[in-house]
Image (cartoon, rainbow, N blue to C red; front, side, top):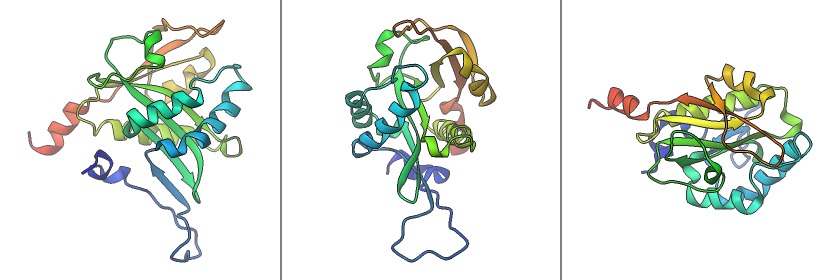
Amino acid sequence: MSVLNAVPFMKPFHIRSPRQQRRHTLPASEFRCLSPEDAVSVFEIEREAFISVSGECPLHLDEVRHFLTLCPELSLGWFEEGRLVAFIIGSLWDQDKLSQDALTLHKPHGSSVHIHVLAVHRTFRQQGKGSILLWRYLQYLRCLPFARRAVLMCEDFLVPFYSKCGFKAVGPCNITVGPLTFIEMQCPVRGHAFMRRNSGW
């Protein structure tokens, strides 16, 4: 059984419109882990979202495919009528703080989930989708026995957004990208404690 199937609230979530849909129409809204086949759609949204703001993409297309091949279970996509509208891509990290290697490596025995990127399609922004998706993702991580915390790096102007979602700033990040500097933020998810509490250990 996959991790996704073991977590009831992370199974594909469908919202039906008032009119009953035909049997073969796509669900109005669905959340699921991503696959390498989603990489192009992911990169198109990411490129539009980040290039216009910072001039840099957190992940290039080959890196998107890389993480969606190695650890698809640490990604989450929000689909509207079959169209990707928002996503998160993560990987595992095994150090207390992020370093340059965290940008490209997945550490299978790590306990920190490094969130590389969260992005929302331009036509769906300012609707709260980013915070809803992040909340669902963090709830999912709390069901993973190996996950102890989520960690990310962001520019100063995004600190209030992530703070509202439960993250705390731990100081300047050791990673720089060209002239850009970042704040490192962490959020405990306590996977082991959650599993013990809900499995009778």
